[in-house]
Image (cartoon, rainbow, N blue to C red; front, side, top):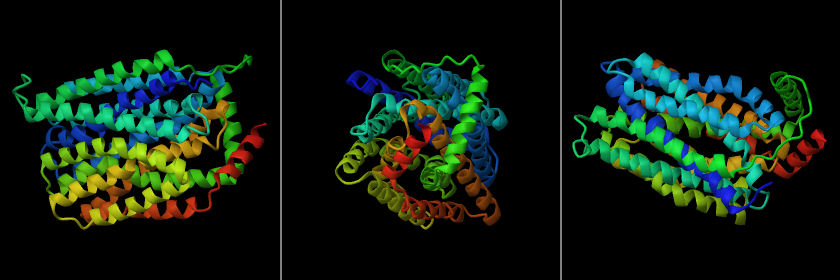
Length: 423
């Protein structure tokens, strides 16, 4: 296991790299551009449903393929190779959005789905490398460092992209559409350049695999074996279900917040500035949450974040003023990185190193399945109730159920149970 600083910071820097896609494309410009350009002249509720369905489809594909690929990656030590395979898919799709014309929402949605698959797929193997660069003592810090750098890096590029949009003539663009399309190119370049340190300096621990069975069959057999064990490991399964529920609410708010703000009639400047607030407040807040977990308790810190999200969801359903959107952005920024980073490190304490990609594939399996259900729930409730407020309020149920199940999780007992089952 390589725990030196170079490998830790090289690993964490990948979050700096690919968070540009999460901020500029997923959370920021694509939802805005989709409504105003790709899906122009379409009713706001319908475009909300289109975006929700596109998010759900990309998550569903990852749900189908990630567990098997994770098992193959562990068996043949291919986590880095699979990470970059998916990363380059996302990079190419971010750049491809430049070529989509006004009103071509079907093509835009298709490219967006592929880009999301690249982004989420690479994260599965990125998470799987966490045990290779950390130990039980520093895993909360290392996981938090990744998310913190992600907020800072994503925020810096997004800030530049916002400047390009607001002063498009200064950058030589004829209109806002050209500026936004150029921002998609900057995302692709940023993601590619800053992913190179992980490729060069993070060394995946090799498994001694002498099995001559074809890799796909090895992966399938290993996946089948792990799935059987996960079903029998009631404590681990309980955590995964709890995580599935509360992270569903988190992911849904991340993906649908801008669309919700637009549905309430808030200005584009308000929505973009709110996203920037989340990025730059999220950087120090995530590091502070990691320290809080070290001195207090990881599980209790996750509970604190869940409680804040529940409060935010209820407030979101009743707000009427743009200043409230700013306040909510600050509150979300205080806990968003924390709940993501600590959930990842909390889970890593329960699983063995040589099965990390495989077990993180299940972790991301449920996380991405949640990313299907949440946006789809918002889309369906919006269509049925014809109210974006009711739709966003429906997300609160995920935080309540997740918190209830998390109460019964004992990570030390689960870790011992998991490791003994794999001996």
